[in-house]
Length: 107
Image (cartoon, rainbow, N blue to C red; front, side):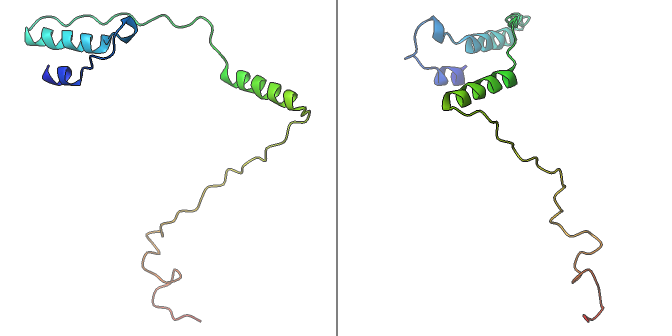
């Protein structure tokens, strides 16, 4: 409880600054101290009925910005190849060998 009180700020006032997390945490701590049943968590807020397609909104916004600048063509973005980067570590077979050979003089 001392930690909660030490971290509490008194300069934030109003209902929009209500610290519901600290209040809920304090209720749980008190219930455990008094060996009571823990308080039930409130039901989560309902999900919004209308979900926004972020990709469509982004494409629409980019289209409006291009139209405002007078651009008509969409520049093509070069496709990146999906090549796997080589490992920086030497394989265990070649570890400690110069040019992958052991005991063989260079030609």
